[in-house]
Length: 312
Image (cartoon, rainbow, N blue to C red; front, side):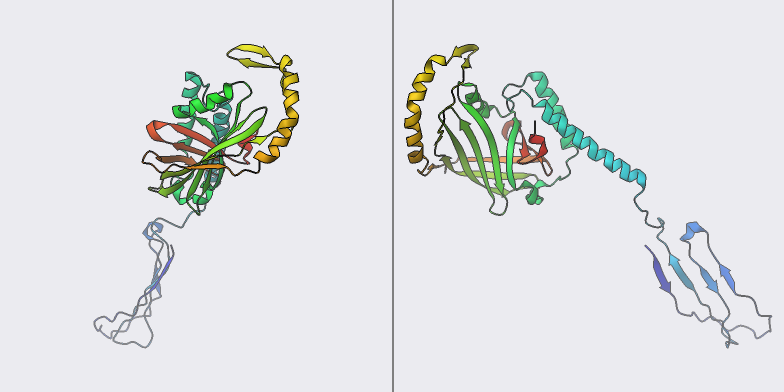
């Protein structure tokens, strides 16, 4: 930082009036290491018995030297860091393939996923996620979890004609609410189950969640029932051709019922008990990926709705 200082004249003791030839102005410039200051000493005219000194310190730079601009090398290093994060995120999402959100992940795959998660956590661009609530806002799709309590729910998708379409978490940071939702689909209808909760910020990374109610969505019956040729059940392939006639006969009834059921409100029930609380620690957060850790060391990897990471 440049500093400009001005010092007033300093009188000194009287000197003999012996005549001396005028001395040229003397400029003393210390070396660069002495903050590159200029010291100018010159006799002042009109002073016979007093000698005046003008001392100037001009353009004195900070002892550490002038501020340095970002060098190309620094910019290249930052670019390489961003590319590494993008590469790690892609490798992590690719490792989820065939794991059914973690349900079918082998021990080897789990170890690989843990290693990639650890590397990303070390490069977290938002080390205080609860102070970046705008990034937390929105709908997040569950891509992977090691939370064993979710596995029975995920296994529902292994039953014939029943599929877990999506597990999501929607955060509203303005109202401090969280909604967890699971969507199921079958040949006759689609429905959902969700929980609504409030959250409190407890630390730069941790939020406390208190669940308030559960909601069972109104089943939405399909107007057109598409029956597959066969289904696989416990490793056995079952031919459904004989059932096509039966299902077709109820299709007209289902079409008339859909209008009635879809107009009914969802079923809500209270979750106000001591067990309806949890906490969540966010260890990585950017605009399209979130990694959180919960009770018992479980991990959740979620991708922001609309992110290119969701594209196959």
